[in-house]
Amino acid sequence: MTVDSDSGLVSWTPAAGSPSQATVIVQVSNARGGHALQQFSIATSGVNAPPVFDALAAQFQGQENQVLQIPVHATGRRGRIARLLGRQPAPGRGF
Image 1 (tube, rainbow, N blue to C red):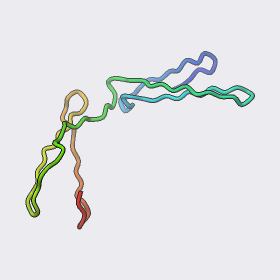
Image 2: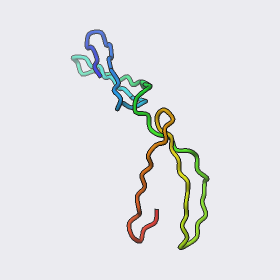
Image 3: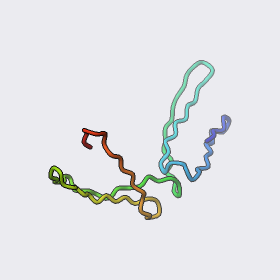
Image 4: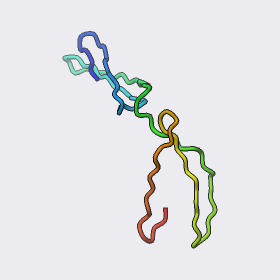
């Protein structure tokens, strides 16, 4: 992202890894030490939008020494199923 110091024109070319919502803060200052900030957001499409989890129930019931299975689904960009990663808790610790 660049800002032309003469015209104030902000230029940015989002790449595939760019966020879908970018916050921009522009600062201007003068020779006597005065300054001001301006903040705005840029929404872009076709970039790295985060996956979205499907809704889950508020609570699940389980029993000691019984396997508890909870279906978790997430949809990624363009409606594709997102890859889910799980981690085991440390021995003696719960989730």
